[in-house]
Length: 127
Image (cartoon, one colour):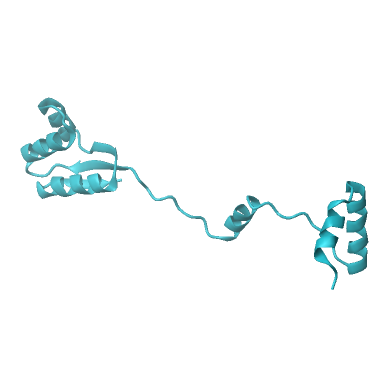
């Protein structure tokens, strides 16, 4: 077996021209081609084309009242508690159904608002 340390030292001392000639000689002798290694950054993009696209999970939700129901005053009170609106603004919002009560809130906040409004008789959508 060849002395690997001596071989590594000799290869390290080659000029670029000599290394290129050695590459060509080995390709011809062994019947292979020396391809440049693929960049690691390119691999994920190639793999992503084969895989199914991943849908982004929604992180912001809107709470919309579609129908007030019979307890309009209770709904106005609940809207005020959820949004910190004044009495007139909350009343105007409730009377303008369908109306967006909260925009761009987390899933937990939207679910909580929907539960509280539906408990008072409103019909609510989370979008």
